[in-house]
Length: 211
Image (cartoon, rainbow, N blue to C red; front, side):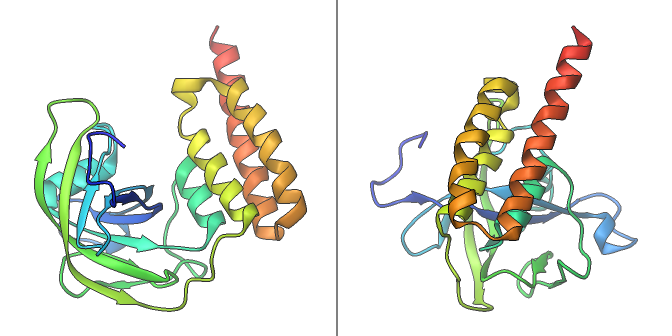
């Protein structure tokens, strides 16, 4: 973890919802951004540190509004889809308004934290955004991540780093992780791996066509 944090702080993978500071009128779903994030958090889940790139919508929204909602999820398929594409509210992903910040809660989350930004350091391409929880709520029990869900999460993270590692390295890792999904995964995890592989293969083909 960079920069250094207290030894008992940890990275937690989850989903972040933020609202655009622009177009304050109009449908909420047009202003909503949903993205996977892995903030560094303290043991009490009061202090959060995000490190989004300046090119990300999450960075622009957090800087522009100073508010957001972080969710603890056990839906590996949703996290994978959000990592490589755009996801939107619908029958499979209901939303509801947050209470203490201007934002949106993913109703299928296990628990969520309503956040207020306390500081933004964006002199580098990868920024540091500090926030504190002003509200939290548990919606249901956390089912947990078995080996297959962990494998999907790792593959999704790898897929977001194509620009750093190249497609060949990511495809090799997906092949390795598929063995775990084949042993312990449900249909949802198999579908997630299929979609991640197709995404990386499409990226590889586009890169080849551009040469």
